[in-house]
Length: 355
Image (cartoon, rainbow, N blue to C red; front, side, top):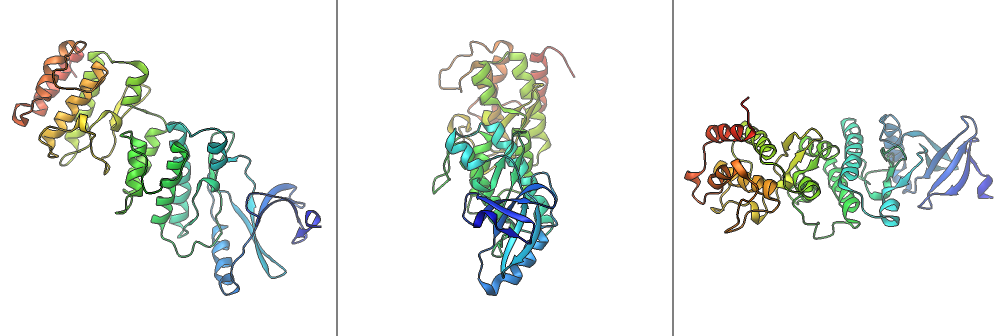
């Protein structure tokens, strides 16, 4: 009987999708598949829920599964939604394995962009989760579940849920009480977004995800390619020095995992998050400052040219002309580290040309 039932005389109900209130249906007027969802809500909340659902129907974005219509059948409210062909993030991870960082970041870019459109319209999703993110065959991620009452949640709740969804994407589990460790930019970003003090600014989240969607962290580049040539490392160092100098104050988290390398070899230092530096890249004085950033920069360049972080007594077998620069950067006395202008001159000399 249920298989032949129609809603509004046009939506023929087909099989159940996931939760029992969600079903595939066929629109016999437009000749297309749609998804319908019964809104199981208390009677006293029905009018406000229908109002919210109709507002959600106005959202338009490539990463939003559109609410096509809202209807009431036998006093029961239903949402009619766009059918998106794809597998949910939850299904993909559980049936296969966690996503690579690049793919997870691209998913995050799509979902964050969809949320930005919704939040600008005054709409909070309220149910961002791996089950509500669809991965399409073209690589696009689509956020489903709009139009369901969000229980007066704030936009910050959506950002927290996006972080938890990203955590599931790369770790295969929810964050729980202990989010995944790791100095790479994505996991650092996830931990910062899950922090009780609140997420970093949306602009920082967006920029980090967009860069991770196309660029590789320096530590991954080193693991893939091995130690890098001194001239190439000096060029990376010069780019990072310029970015540090452009900042007000100190960065506090200079390390290979916070540096992204583009296909063209361009180095970008991502915005500092709450995680700070790991011990191998923390200046011996233990106080965050511009001088400590220079020590961390030296430790990062040491790792890039030698393939391993600096350690007491470690030799510079591959550094060549870069070795004297690294010795000075890694001085235990901040006063002995080169001034930025001097360091810039020395790095250019190692690169073999001046700019």
